[in-house]
Length: 186
Image (cartoon, rainbow, N blue to C red):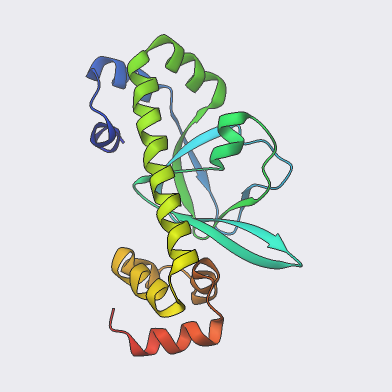
């Protein structure tokens, strides 16, 4: 975790060690809903092991928004940051292990140490950049381009996540996803 945070923003290592000391281990079985619509995200998670997905339900159909896996943060970001109810789900795909920190402790440490606040501003900027890129791809790319872009960026997920979830994430019909999967070398 320390190496991951240092790549985002290198800060005084004593402050970083203190900050990390407040994160606790947390393990969740596969197919566990960690956060549901209407619940407020009380923790920020750092993924040690496992894969999770965030999704909306519309007319009982899942619309996958994101996958998280090591090394990355997980949770419902806007619910955590604003302490308002989530509008979507966070669910484990596989058994998952995390370090987590409560909203209150995270806020306290950011107020105490400007460097931690800067670190998480930069982490939030990276999330925003990724979301803008994903939005661009969903709006501007055809299904083949979306598939190819994903295959270049995250080829490992083809063997770790169901093709149904990947098709949902890419906003590609399952039949078309299968055709693309069978024609493109990964």
